[in-house]
Image 1 (tube, rainbow, N blue to C red):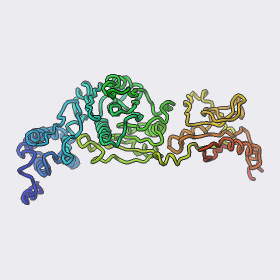
Image 2: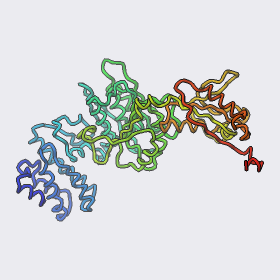
Image 3: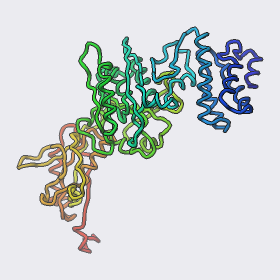
Image 4: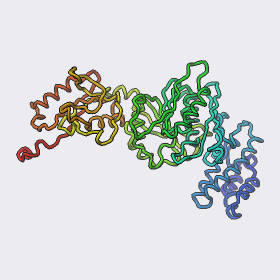
Length: 507
């Protein structure tokens, strides 16, 4: 308050143009039920911040002032939300009377409208952003009524309507979260500025919930697959079906639009492997979520020059672990001033932008990395998936093995255990396929080729230069290499054949 009075005395405070009346503000603070002492502590700094706004359309972030008071212990979060709403009603009334721009913001209900359309110099305040935020709305708005959302694509206004349901014991995917609104509006903004280029692109949404982000991408011309856990798919599929006509491009063939189940901890369906130009998702980093599996799924979904746009809310306990597991990606936060919608953004929601190596680097990266698999039975594979009760991962077309079947010549085939045929009656799972899948997950290769050379029970002498297994491996690897292939390494797993002779151990 004293800072404001000093500025006012120097002619720098727009007292005559203040966006809110001081007495009205004080009345709103008092009506919030706070004690007189706390009201006096709050009213002056609030009015000072509001009055020092440079123009009527750019009201100072009152909610952020309240956040400071929360940190100082003067105000609880629930009290801050209630007070922010009261002050917002006053601001809205004054803007409607005095704002020559004539903007109207969604002051309540369950609707998100078009983004900021006024002068670029007119920026919304935190209170205006808080007006559309859904986290503190009524249960009816969040779980019972449909959520209505508007977006613009070209000259066309698209309206989406999404069913919502109460939370169940299975999770929290049945309401439209603030993060999904922020990301949807950011995608709309990027597309309007020509930077997204979503028309005709393949988009996959992870943890889609009600499906807002994926349906927004579909309305902007993308081919979209919306995914979530099996128990969340019925609501997701219903929203996809209900909005299919709304997002279809007029006068053009309908784009691909589907809802399907996807569990990050399970092998990725083969038809989704390397299928996505853009991967989107919101609130994926809750503490305890399988973020390493999420990173693996992301890498398996992505094409070489893919991007991922992931909205991150307050619950981000797994974010650091996810970033540590997301090798082969560059990451940054979307710029709030240029990439997020001015109105539809919140202080506790960021948009994480991940990018693969890109077309230029992808062109320099070897098409296929070749690894020779050498050693004894541990490499050849003796593990029985059937006895262990483990389902074999589905084949991945990006992983091949140079092998012989049915008397045919050796050639490249889609890899599957058992990779080796050194002892057919004992053949099982070895480490080769797991290694190849991890390389792909981390973005180190576009394809991986495995050359099985191991032989169970073999002594080290047979693997020395001039030994029969050494020479056979050299010959097989040379025969396997094709155009674009790079011999990247040799995997060795040796067992116990030489351990029974002390002289061999010492040699």
